Amino acid sequence: MDYLLGDLRRTHYSKDVNPEISGEEVLIMGWVHEIRDLGGIIFVIIRDRDGLVQITAPSKKVDASILDDLRALRKDSVVAIKGTVQDAGKAPNGVEIIPAEVIILNPAKQPLPMDPTEKVKAEIDTRLNSRFLDLRKANVSSIFKIKANMFKTVREYFY
Image (cartoon, rainbow, N blue to C red; front, side):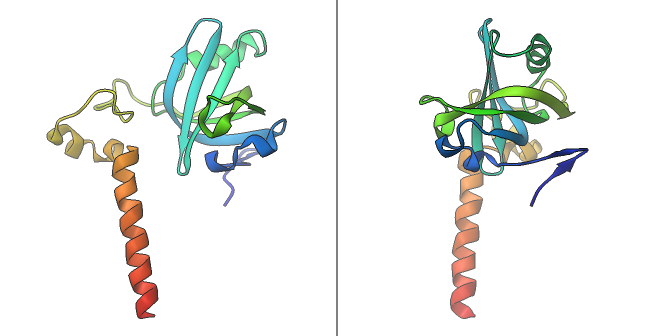
């Protein structure tokens, strides 16, 4: 299913961005999972329903306005990023995207009640009060995916 945004159409999910499509232009959409600004280069990890993909913005290759847009991002903001795929061995999926366009679809309110990247542990009360963030953690969502597959198998057996 494609998501249409004006004249922009999602072309790939994170699992589809791989070394085989290196050099192609893609449009991905998702939540900002992590941001690292190292001065001359900015790394942004985008999370969608299928996993993670890395956006790499070196100041020598990317327009200054795009760098400003990336610096304005906050964790868990919803974004659409259009760019070119290139090989990068250390990035998730073995590729990174060099951005050509950044659209902030919905900025996240800051500060977040808990850290969905699990760098800061949260007490159970905070986790339950912010369940929508807690469910975005990989280990929590994996439990639901395993249960869904198990129930699907049982239903198929009975059919």
